[in-house]
Amino acid sequence: MKKYLCLMLSVYLFMFSMVVWQTQDRSLKIIACDVGQGDAVLLMYQKTQVLIDGGPNDKVLDCLSRHLPWWDRTLEIVVNTHPEADHATGLIDVMERYKVVNFVKNEDAPGTDVYRLLEDGVKANGSRITTNPDRLVIGKGMIQIDIVKNKTRNSKLETRKLNLNSLVLLVKYGSFEALLTADIEPPRTEEVGDELKKLNIDWPIEYIKVPHHGSKNGLTQSLLELTKPSVGVISVGKNQWGHPTDEILNLLYSKKIKILRTDEVGDVVIKSDGKKMWY
Image 1 (cartoon, rainbow, N blue to C red):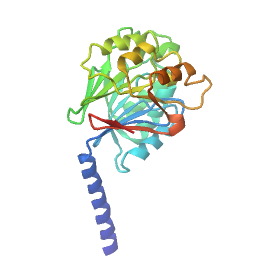
Image 2 (image 1 turned 90 degrees about the horizontal axis):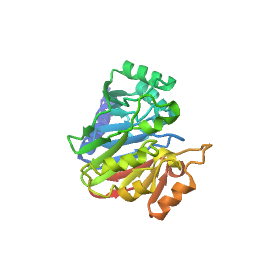
Image 3 (image 1 turned 135 degrees about the horizontal axis):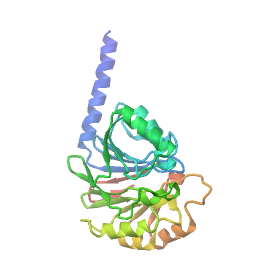
């Protein structure tokens, strides 16, 4: 009995110390999860986690287990940028394994088979649903996530054009900013640039998630020249389309942007204290 009490006390003290450490840590983590050919981005600030997309399979669960404390089974916010399988499938597994407090959905998400299953999962989870919000705020207002407006959105887009309706997120922490671009492609890419000019941004935007896994129909030179990022993160796995393409890689190289790829380094973890960025 005495040994059991000592063990329980040790576990309690360990958990308490970890909670204290989380509370004292003021860094924002942006983790591009290695989920293969798909997207899953985890934002972590102290005890708050935001998951943006879930990849094409259940590998997102491995990413969450690597980075979340083992006792934390709650995600404060989950965002699905658009309903394609390589962004939405893993969220079905997330809904089964984690309590999701808030689910942010894309207003123009048609009823694909994967998305219907995800909607069932959200309902069973009991998540609060928000559709296309203008802004999300976490960390007692320290972290601001703007949803970049989409003036060309069309609820009747064919499934193959769903990329145009992707939710684009601008994450702001102090003077640090990160642009999460999902699978946008022209003309939406140019529109995002125009909308960014209207926002209160401390230029440059240090971090950009390269659109559509490095497809040639994603990132444009004009968006790159506007944002002037230091790091370009590519979420990609083995694929038949040649992602990332030489055109995009050469464009990033020409601007001396550090390229970090999930297929080469695994989970890409970027940290910022609101001023500096490191990885």
